[in-house]
Image 1 (tube, one colour):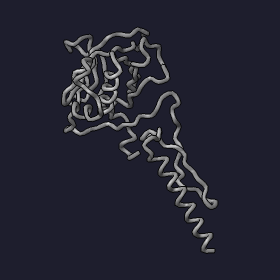
Image 2 (cartoon, helix red, strand yellow; image 1 turned 180 degrees about the vertical axis):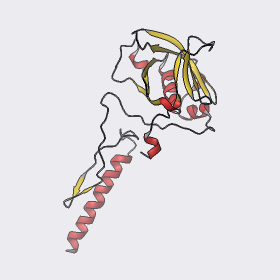
Image 3 (tube, one colour; image 1 turned 45 degrees about the vertical axis):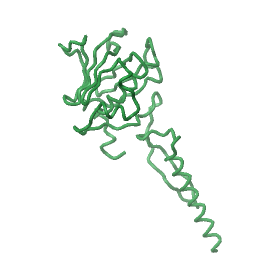
Image 4 (tube, helix red, strand yellow; image 1 turned 60 degrees about the vertical axis):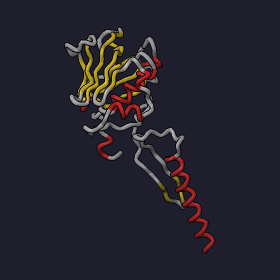
Length: 206
């Protein structure tokens, strides 16, 4: 009987170790915001069962969370993420804002237009203008409306440069944007998601 109990305890510990290694391993592809079913039968029972959530097959889930703190230094944050801002002439970034040209796909027409985008953590907006003069806002969204930002891996729209195309999803629409370089695209994605307050899961600790 003692031997049987010991074997059951060993099996239980081994299963727990496997679950932890799968969920915390450095090479795990599981996004931070993703939940899925994990169930392992041990002695007729179930360990680690979690509620299943539908997953969008067209894109990977976002790995990062928005940052609401007014004390955030945006440039330092982006540089600490590994971006060499000084070597990317396509973006102008300081402690509270990011500016630069992006091509935007028209909401009604299929053409791509060059627009000057401004991300402002003080005004809490992502807006765009016709040019760098910033005289008249052509469109954009408040942070609270921005739900997600991600690469257009599925090539959901016809783009001149699919590998430079990303999506900003808001409550009302999806902005298909094309950056001038791979590094500019990565910087914009990380910048915009610091203000994506429309992403609700982080408020509930998931």
